[in-house]
Amino acid sequence: HIDNFFATQYVDAKFIVPRIIRLLTREVNKHKIDYGTLRYIYRKVREKTNLVKPRKPKRLYQLPNKDELNKFFGIIDDPVHKLMFEFLIGTGAREAELCSIELTKINFQNNTILITGKGKKDRLILMSDVLKSKIQIYLSNRNNRYLFESNRGTKYSTRRIQQLCAHYKFRADIGELVLTTHSFRHIFNTYLAETGVSKETRALLAGHSNTSTQDIYTHLSVGGQIATDILKKLSELGL
Image (cartoon, rainbow, N blue to C red; front, top):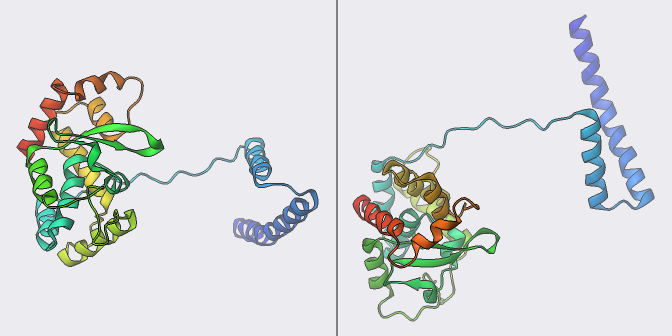
């Protein structure tokens, strides 16, 4: 009997779904229902039927170990490409933020860079003395508008950065490990957490600030203690 019940349920679902789709299509066309109204209808149906969207189980994010990172960076033969990924892992910036950094936003004296993140929100990120030195050497004899520019004098696209990451990951032969441009952001924040940087400060540097962390902005300015402490930790990490 149980088998018959599930078989009936399957058959009913198989035939009822197309009927519902045809009915909805006819009514949408008949009444010229727009996209927003249709979404509202679906939402109200979900509410009245207590339908809940199933959540995907969260998986632990597996980060590359030091040997895998060394293989990745060791295979990069283009010094500019290597510097771009060193920038990502050393600042926690998103690839879109990296592509849009203009030289006028970089303060080498204070080791800070003003970037525009998600939602067009401005925030400061920090660069260690090691990273700053590499950037200054790279920029010598260049007349860039953006920090990183292609041979055509245009800024890199996020797609290009992603392609480069996939290319060097493949060449490094580090197996099935997931390594994307966003992985370097996770690595940066993991390193900071391991060195004792507070959750609030990490959130601020990552662009996840809220009202409880706004006051930390003052400490990231010239001579701020938090900025000084983080720069010291970044140098100790060799970033």
